[in-house]
Image 1: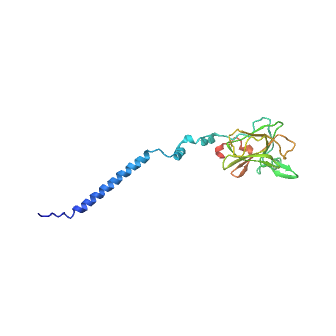
Image 2 (image 1 turned 180 degrees about the vertical axis):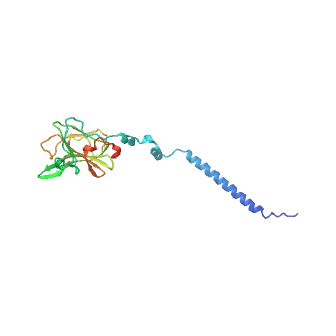
Image 3 (image 1 turned 45 degrees about the vertical axis):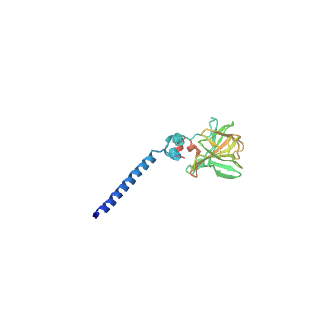
Length: 212
């Protein structure tokens, strides 16, 4: 019986066919895996980031305007913010005289004949409640990394450190200070925006989106 020899091209051809089959199989397997992953729901964290309804705070900030820290009609500004760009006569009216020293007013001093309520001007977190020798009781509220407000000379504090407050939340009532020790119902209001003092009278009615 005679043995037949394989032709020289048979074995190389078989290897090529096997390689083609292997690559085709891997390609099809990769498509199946990718399709399977794409059909599965995204993780909870990703869902939160992509779901517009889960970010109501941004929508609220867009249309929110700053309010005044009081609503009583009989409240008057008796000592305005010291503005370096104002004329000398106006600046002199914004100086605080205490223990024979003149100081530039860094906020606005409000007074009334009757006690009045004090409100948070925007949503925020109470960062501090403390006593100051000159300004009396002080509430600090952080609205963002860029914006902090100080409610000074208050009494009957309604909030504690760590409390989350909404715009319009009653946080205290008017109180006393040593800037004007003849007035029983005062509020000294101060605003820091991006680390700089801001005139409260220009702060009111601004859009929160431009501040936060």
